[in-house]
Image (cartoon, rainbow, N blue to C red; front, side, top):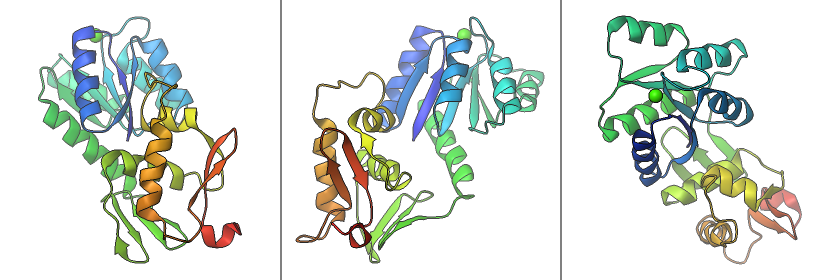
Length: 227
Ligand code: CA
């Protein structure tokens, strides 16, 4: 899951980003409302964690603008304001959930997972060839055989399966599955692609993931790719 955190308070931002990172969420951070809106418009986040009192553009206005523009990314408001009318205003502005500071990180991550499930129940399983991924349960099967994956391997596979046949650069993969602070000189994308191949491919047969020289990787059904 890729999450946008919009929070101007350093201490809270660091705490939230670190906690979400530990849960294998890929996290981008915006320090003010304008930057948050720009990122939310540009990228396909699975959820947005939104503070209310922000420089340049407040959280409620950000949320309203997104909804007016037809963006339905789930929004969880994180705020020190705990009056009922604050919660109502937040939900009326188009937010999906509201969590009051201080909060337990376990509750934040559980709520994000719940938002994601609600979103995902609308979408069917991803199927490419005999490989099947269920975003709601994170179960992966090949020809009915369950394939256990680590969280990063799963995130990588879901990213690939949502973009079949498209060449994905290492930078695109890194920014989605890891985050913007990713060290682009490292070979971690290649290492994880290899791990994933070892798990999903059949030895001796073509891989689901093909390397495109000088560009990146493309995901496709080895049986129809003709490779
Ligand atoms: Ca704030």
